[in-house]
Image 1: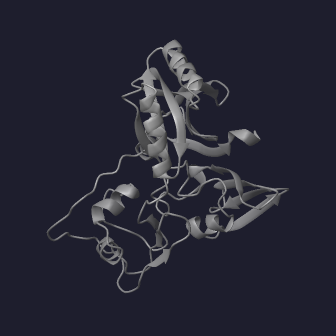
Image 2: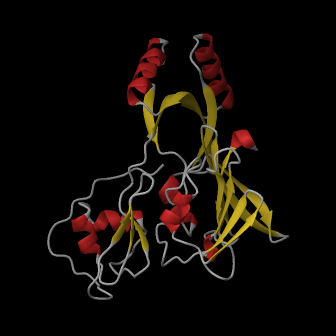
Image 3: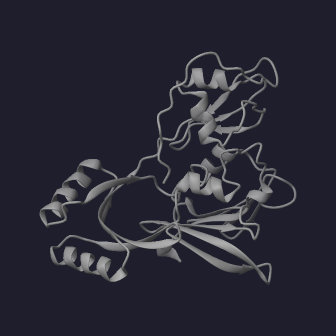
Length: 293
């Protein structure tokens, strides 16, 4: 997951202002605060109003300059509740990680193995639980260290999400964050949302029991990069947002071309990102629950 740095800015900053007059409309749905830019808004005004910095807003929304546009949806903050994972070892050999897992299980400490790829090399990580409550995580960490794993530590990671939308969120949160689509098609419990006329930019499968988001797929080519600058449209933006993938593999696409598929996993949730044959463009991103596959 992305590592955040506190950014301090000082001095007078020159801004490019597109229009004059107007105000921002803030949407407080979910954990991330989203602003819908209106006529006359500037990054300076947004940063001042919401007690943040121009640099921070630019970082969250992949902005290269200070120009913003009416209708643009900007993420202002990123305060999603994190999972506190107990990391009990990282190994280059799968056998060593498996031995660590078995060791912890014999101590009645729940443990599991996951993989992560760094610089093309696969590493096997051992996790001994994940907690939303930090105190519970600290209690588990003490138990792991008492069992003999002295270098265990807590790793805080955000839940997997797409533009701040996570599995289990209400359907209304989609329109609150992305805006009202031009058209919606419904087939059984699957909704296709069209933000442009040429294709569905978002597809969501609803949970039949409570109507919440069961799975979520985003197709960036059918969304406006100008209107949704915080949405990852390139591989580099994906890695900046989510970090290195747990798994990366080459797959066949366009009948004979080779594309790349990145897989992120956290607990029972999985995010798959398909990278086009050009090695950069994001074809789609899909967030699913492994339990219901």
